[in-house]
Image (cartoon, rainbow, N blue to C red):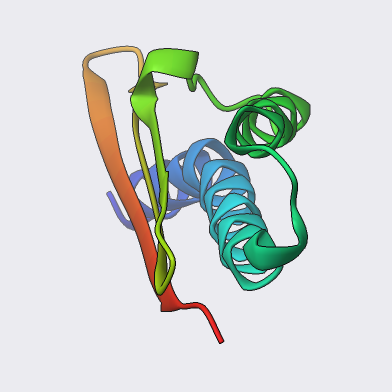
Length: 105
């Protein structure tokens, strides 16, 4: 029984850890994108960069899921996506709701 629990833990780790790493890398990218937003010329260009990074990390992000709003004083980036974690018995839908809101100096 203990061996089964250990094997299940290893299996779930193999399934979940890469997803977590990519999600954290994407979150870091969004924060970096928000920090440098005042230097960017176009909101569409920023959205395209975000979408490219999501595809590079193999995250199921659609263009519609990206909300990018830049005002004279703030930058707000929101991205929602769901990653299915498939197991032999059940498919877990892991929802991510990334939000970065920073002041523009």
